[in-house]
Image (cartoon, rainbow, N blue to C red; front, top):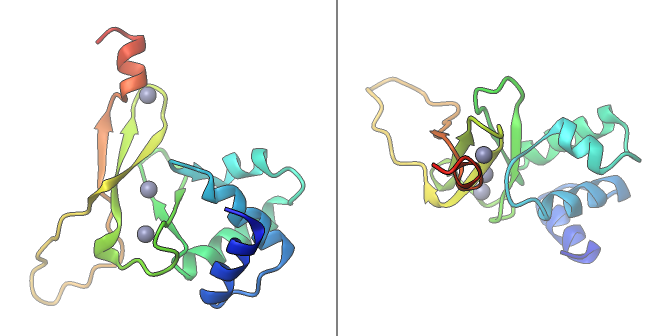
Amino acid sequence: MNAKDCCDILTQAGIRPTSTRILVYEAIAEEKNTFSLGDLEERLPSIDKSGLFRTLTLFHDHRLIHSVDDGSGSLKYCFCHNHGNCREEEEHCHFYCEECRKTYCLDQDLIPHVDLPEGFIPRKINYIVKGICANCAKRKHL
Ligand SMILES: [Zn+2]
Ligand SMILES: [Zn+2]
Ligand SMILES: [Zn+2]
């Protein structure tokens, strides 16, 4: 994705496209799977951590990225390919590898619908499959 596309998507999402925001959006558009604040810090050393955090929070508020609590203790994010038009039920499932501790996006698998009892208000759905990823399984000859 080039800077122009990033700029358009940010503008459409109602975000003022500053150079930092474009830089961050370009970087995360290349991520196939989830990333943490720390991962992004390593990739974009020119941006300070609080600036990165504010940018991610802004993107998250505008639904340009998803957040995933994979149980590892640090919040992970992933890029939304619907560019801000994702609804909760269009979010996908994730796979957490207990060997390499990577969290993969299962883009094709949407979170199944859950019928909540009357009066219950959902705030956040995490659908995580835990196990061993294909790379680790091969490495361990499973
Ligand atoms: Zn999405
Ligand atoms: Zn793995
Ligand atoms: Zn994902």
